[in-house]
Length: 548
Ligand code: CAO
Image 1 (tube, rainbow, N blue to C red):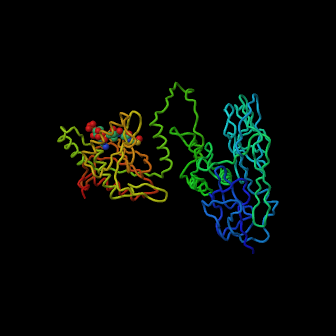
Image 2 (image 1 turned 30 degrees about the vertical axis):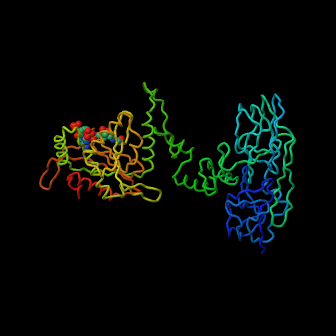
Image 3 (image 1 turned 135 degrees about the vertical axis):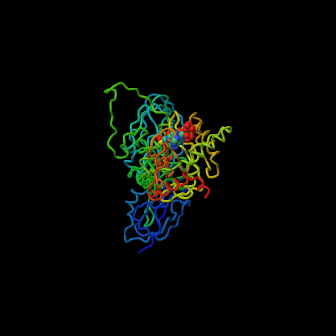
């Protein structure tokens, strides 16, 4: 079997182009005309196909290399007589539209002027993949109107005239050919001088190894010249920086390329980037903008994104007088977060009671002693200290999920839910392990006031490792708080009540505090949750244990 050197074919006027993507590697089996590398000039990107079928034995170029016609790309061990015949190469290979010198603008005309697809070389039935302009736009000579794309290259089609766009004759998805009417301009129409200089090249003589890539561009009498698309590093009007085959691949999968982060040179989007994005969407790790738009809003949305039946639409006015009020900003934001957390976290709640008889007595006496200081020691402050002790003993409750890994945090910042006129807010007290109950009580008072006054900054609401939601001052027995992602657990506290508790000999009155611990079952098991609650109960019933 013969070793064949595959060279860069005739790529028109492109002197030296940069290799920006390697699409094959040593050991790969390639077909004749399969794309091997992508090269890029300052104006265009194009794929270089193989002249022959076989197995890649040696790569002769690396990313960043400058290549030109005749540069050996790689060596293939040819699989029999599979070299593409010259004729086939001539039509299939990359036709790089020739660069054309800018024409001086001279004539001024008035009235409607038609703009047609110029000579775009061997490209037939190329798809319009982007439209840059709309009726009413003022167009300059050589301003790009649309981008067209074949399976191997893409290019922008500029306007041959200046003026105001009256009518656009194509849309995304149409296919166009040389001479097709693109647009009608009117107003002060400036015409590019004719003739423009265009390169005419003949198909390269097909040798047994080289790919003939004719840049067969005939000079057109007047007007526009196809300017290859995608200046590297400066994608035009938001067009993603990617090769035609990658964009085709993305379109086939329905991937919105503008949302894919390019990891290639100069941020270029590679096929691997599209695959990574697709995997992330399938795994639910990310959403496309369209999915996000469809996702249920704070109010519940329509549930379509979850495959649910539509949300019931009821004309409430039919049944009685109504008043419609838009929800406030905070309610909308917290609503959307709560909904996501409720749906995405496999949450379980354990309920338990803690005997806080002695602790409450201590709290009341401390407050009496400290009356003059102005700082009121709250039950919530004791709960925070008790939780820090439990979080230290059971560190997974102070962790967060990051993909398949758990991030254990060696700091203990505790959030507490605060009911404000604008809605629920969660201020965060930092480094609770280093602070005493008095300091925590004081900070909590200040933060709760700020929350109610709408003065809480984002920094004061971020970084929590665990949250406590206390309804103790209001009432209730137990509830099921929703975890504040990316935390993995939350403690709900309700109103303590005097209850008869059996001490082994008799019922005694004890002040019992209802605790509801919601935990993420992906991270925490039921037994651990029960242990956490039991430990918390022990601390609250005898706070000296915090010191242990
Ligand atoms: N059991 C019985 N009484 C309790 C109690 C409990 N667990 N916790 C507090 N109390 C009592 C206090 O003793 C105090 O009574 P006095 O006024 O007679 O002294 C009163 O309730 C107020 O308590 P506090 O000043 O200590 O305030 P707090 O710690 O209860 O609340 C804060 C502070 C910010 C948590 C609260 O104002 C708040 O916003 N709570 C609502 C939180 C919320 O909305 N959670 C739900 C989130 S999920 O939707």
